[in-house]
Length: 218
Length: 258
Image (cartoon, rainbow over all chains, first blue to last red; front, side):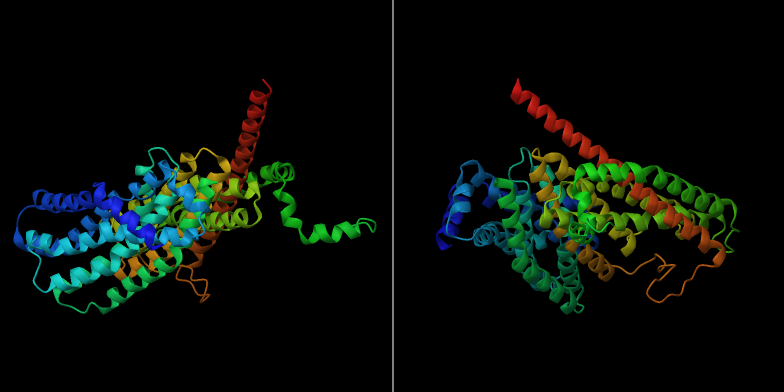
């Protein structure tokens, strides 16, 4: 498992692409928002938590189609399927690697981009906490979507259509927590719900992803 | 049941539903039942809608706009029940591998999609004069929009995969996972925004209702009519899917023999 994780991380770092691309996309989305809604600081401050969450979510989505597609093309997935390691574990490791290379950088970059959007000072801490809690769920659910579309040619668009509705609860609770944090009100309820969703998806989704992969590659 | 058939008959009577997992038996039954179903569905929908539209008084506050309820509520009901049906048939496919079941799920999806669309559109048409807006980010409206997206994704996945058995497998899992997330979204959305939409008019759990009898009876008939219409449509479409699958199999065999 650790070998697989190290391999995935090394591939992501050395082959470029996913690692920097997600961050760059996040930056661009955040830059474009003031152009589209106007530069008033009060307006930007009020929408900042939501925009940052949406940007992080879309950046996460962007890198999903590479998550399993490359392994499918070069045959690694077939090897993983016959390996002594359960496919559920392999899929979990894949999701973890995706989070480490995409989710974690997004979490760390979010406060910097918050400055651009005039995020209230009280919001920074809760923004980072909510993103740190929520992005693992995005990676795990995304892995399921990637597993569903792995054998399909030009599955990228289909992947977004399948995954985005599944992201709804995570986005609602995550953005709500960040918004309440920025407004200085009580964040415990959405934060607890977000943590619950993340833990539940980590516990359950690898089984669905592995089942889907086995069916798709049969 | 005759006595000599009893030995085998016991088994058959226990497994009676599964008999129709055989496409031939299913088609035979469905073609026998369908004319009756279509007639009943047309009758109920016609009676419900005509009675509802012409036979009921205007509401004292909502005026004649209240009459859209005879389209809106039954369509919404069937939109949710269609997904339930897909969930059950998907489970049956995953557990017992009956092709009819998978094809029924496939056949129900577009019907459910259209029902969701009808509910959304009639809701918007009613909401404009009543709430003063075509759309509000109300929990119920939002949940239906999300349900609409789930239907779209489900149908798109069916279309995208070439191998029919793999497609049935993957869409079944998507349906299961999607159901969990749809329920989750429903409650998340409720938490996210307080509603404009009124509560249910016919709460089954409490037995009471907030609709007067004049409006209630045509509504029930209309709901039954939509249920029957859905059933007839699904049977018809499932039959089409089975025949389509058969044609494909025959064509594949022909190509191999040539």
